[in-house]
Each structure stands twice: as structure tokens, then as C-alpha cells.
Image 1 (cartoon, rainbow, N blue to C red):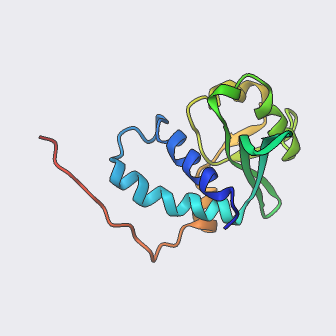
Image 2 (tube, rainbow, N blue to C red):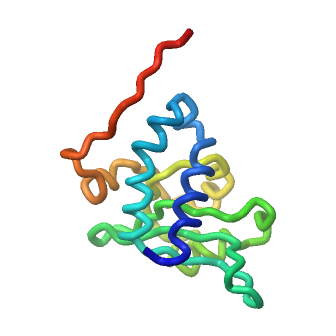
Length: 149
């Protein structure tokens, strides 16, 4: 585990918690299921950080990406709210090899992704790419189904 991995995992889980696709999942199920997946992605894929040049401990944001076979895949892009609209997301994507002309897949669809979509018209959403790479179907999470009262 790198020293930045806890921040990457925590910010990923917290920011994705507010996405449209996860809002009806209980917190127990969300964290029990997604936490090991995100940890696996953070360890198995490349993660680039944007940091303050005068204070490298201050992280502005990060991007997690890899190639699955020959396919470029963007798993997640995160920039701290205070630093958004400062082109950090664009710089991270460019440094990771994702340009407006490049074709690639992305596996998570967080809130705010709609702002990047028009600038990357060849990007395609496919969350299923991570299934064969990162999810072991032998390890099943403990589900916490609660009846509405």
C-alpha cells in the first residue's frame, strides 16, 4: 500500500456515494461491496496524483486508470471541490493518456461526469470491464437487507 492509497480509496468511496447509481443502496451494502473493489483497483491500476509543487503532501486530485488488454480504461477521476474548474481534471486525464480524440472506456459514472462527456466524445461507459479483472465471484459480501418501516 502506498502512503496516498488511503486518501485515494476514501475520496473515491465518499465521492461516488453521491452518484445516481448508488443512492438507493444502503450504506452497509455500499461500503461492504465497493470498498474491496476500490482497494483492488487502487492497487492494481495506475494512479496519478496532482499535488501542490511547494507542498507535495497537499493532493489536489488523482486519476486511476489502466489498460485491460489493449483497451485504455479510466476507472475514476477525482479533484477536491476547492480545486475544481482549475483544469486539474483535464491535466490529469492528459497525463494519463486520455485526450479529447482518444477512444477509451470508463467504468464508474460519478456525479459531475456529464461535464467531461462532451469534451471526450469517443469515451464509452462500460462498468462491466472490471468484473473479470477485479471481482472474485467466490468471495460474496455479507448483505444487509432491511425492511422499510
